[in-house]
Amino acid sequence: MTKDVKIFIPKLRIVDLVQRAGGISRETALEQAAEKIEGLRESSLLGISEAVLGMERILGVDHPIGMSDMVWLLRHAERIVTLAETFGHVTLALVGKSLCDLTHRFLENEDGKREPLRVHADALRLVMPPRKVSQEEAGRILGELTRILVFCGCMPREESRLKALRDLELLDTGPDARLDRLLAKTQKEFSVPIAAISLVDLHRQWFKSSIGLDAKELPRGVAFCSYAIENDGVMVVEDAERDSRFASNPLVTGSPGVRFYAGAPLKTSDGFNIGTLCVIDAHPRTLDAAGLKKLEELAREIVKIVEADAASRPARFRQQALPTASKEVLGA
Amino acid sequence: MNLNWVSALLIDPDAHSASLLSGMLDGFGLQKKVVVETGEAARTALGNELFDIIFCDAVLPDIPSAELIQSIRHMEGNPIRLIPIVVLTGYGRMATVAASRDAGANFVVKKPVNANIFYDRLSWVSKGGRQFVESPGYVGPDRRFKNAGLPGGVGRRASDLNGELGAPAEPNMSQDEIDAMLKPMKLDI
Image (cartoon, rainbow over all chains, first blue to last red; front, top):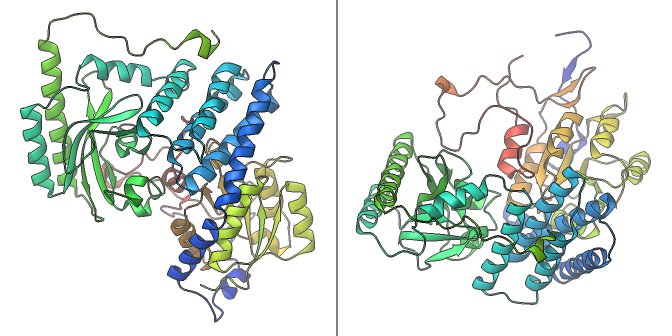
């Protein structure tokens, strides 16, 4: 260590101040904070509509989108994400994030394209409160935006991943007794109330097999599995309420009240994570090394079955990964 | 924890996001605060008043937030240089995390701030005890750690992150990833 380096424990005033008498408990602090924030709901909605209006103004004028316009758009898209997530407007937050990703990409390339941005502004308008959006409509809108992001190069691997998924011809197919048996085995093995074989599609997760879930599919934006497929290992969330990625997720705050999640990616032999085998509990839990290994093994078995099935099907014209986005939308 | 006596400086160019944070801090009992929108206004405020903690947005309209943090950390002889600095980053600006960390921020949180997590961070920072480093290359909370890798080279949990800190591959990161970048993991002097 050189003489120029000083290391010490600083004396901070805050350390003494917080210890003075008259403090409040963590519970009270959190309750009060929630109340204060709830009191900002109305003004935050105004903040959102103000941002959308500003975006429409920038994108409505027929002149090139400059760097400063894009910085403005990014800043306000961020605001929308922050406010929408705070007040539980899930779809609006997802549209805002999509716009952030797109603007970010354009800023990197120093080239902003009006049409994809304008479609995002339109989408914001469509999903903005007080307007209520059905799950189907939200899925359709988010699907369209993802298509735009893929086209604009914001999600380089996603297109190939979706193609790998679709080539297996599993989506929207009927039950498969072998997979159902494997899932039942998984559920028993981990003694969880919920287990699923989830396939992550463009804008939804679709359950090839599930136990303890009513829905046949869920919007991708709320899907834990959508995070799980981003890495190759098992994703374990021991307590979703304490995980900033999921603490405000409607599947955590509402039904089915997810606390524990473990998902092993379904990795194809080409290396694409098409979905997950996941186990879910309504209470916080941990998973030991043996459990992780077991879940991965079961996921591998599932992939083996679905890949063997696909290989045995007669070769025929495979559907395209993504329908070509309309020229009008992308300004191509 | 008693935040009644604590005085905070909030720097956020977005009035709406500033109100959310301000409201949350109010709820925690931290009511003494000054809210400003620019780095320049922050400098003025710091010259006029004594603060105990700073909350600063990662992207300021006039100067890079890293520059502001660095200038505070380099106020030699002034106790303000030791002040805890919390950086808040919106979705899509996560690339600024490394810059804020290198400038001497205590920790970085993502917006919207989750009250549970934020409260715990505040109580952690208010306990003090974290070493401070003053060196020619870096002034700020001690964040040195020697990455000895995972025990036996194998992770114990599936959620163990890769030890390598590289350039951000994606435009955004989760709070856990940010934490992993900032948390002193293993100290070896």
